[in-house]
Length: 339
Ligand SMILES: NC(=O)c1ccc[n+]([C@@H]2O[C@H](COP(=O)([O-])OP(=O)(O)OC[C@H]3O[C@@H](n4cnc5c(N)ncnc54)[C@H](OP(=O)(O)O)[C@@H]3O)[C@@H](O)[C@H]2O)c1
Image (cartoon, rainbow, N blue to C red; front, top):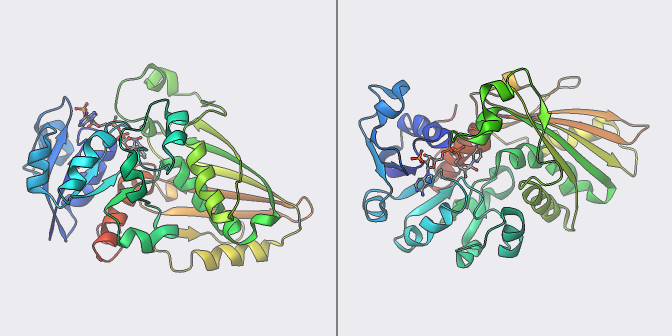
């Protein structure tokens, strides 16, 4: 049994992590906290009535360090890098759901998050928590930078072709749609019911902060800089991300070639499912699960691949993937608590 804590328990990702961890057979949840929210967890989240006897109070490093071996930081970016140095010094392992340690260059972070990185020294200690690509490094990690929700769907949709045929790939356009919980629980006019319901819109076009993360990890796979186009949209649903990815090639590839490549790449992955011919990814097949579904179509004459990739933003896109990373870090069966 390991003792784990969650900071940000009043938020959507924090409570999703808590729900998984309360049922996890190898874990005891010993600490929960937030910022302004306090009181019994079952009062904050009535759906957990009778399932959790913990109380939530303002974050206190000393208490967190004393009661936990692993901490999930389900807090906004900039908050996580304020808490991390002290926790790492006290040998507490961290799984950070925020964006603070995902980009290895502090300058890059400053450009896209418009704030100075306050913990540059720990950037080198962070491992990008996408198990399909970095499982070996995650096993030994003390600080896991859990990927963003859009980057998880986008990178998993492009990884096989970028890792194997990057010289054949001319252009990538990622057209992605997210449910409203992707924006978190904090109040925001653009996420209010009347703004979202019966509406569908693009936002942060050509300026979304997840663009450099997707570009960085796909470029790393390709072994060269690979700029791409990413446009996010807001869907009037609670949860789920669907990315439709247009990949232009400079050489013909057959459907069978692409399908075999994706099948082989994800053959042993417990949560990434390559769909059969003529099937495409759908939100309803992945919401409330830790799966990523990937569908493939190929127009051989146009040298065009269409990949669809769907996840639940709060599970494979956040808390589910975070628990998957914890399982890997502690040599637990990777699917524990997640199937
Ligand atoms: N939502 C998603 O689909 C998703 C997906 C991937 C990654 N993420 C990332 O995960 C993190 C959490 O996202 P979320 O959507 O769950 O956010 P959220 O619903 O807005 O919740 C944020 C949580 O952080 C707490 N918090 C804020 N400032 C704090 C501080 N200074 N000290 C301690 N706790 C503090 C809040 O507490 P109070 O309520 O008391 O203020 C709340 O519990 C973010 O970095 C986000 O980018 C989210």
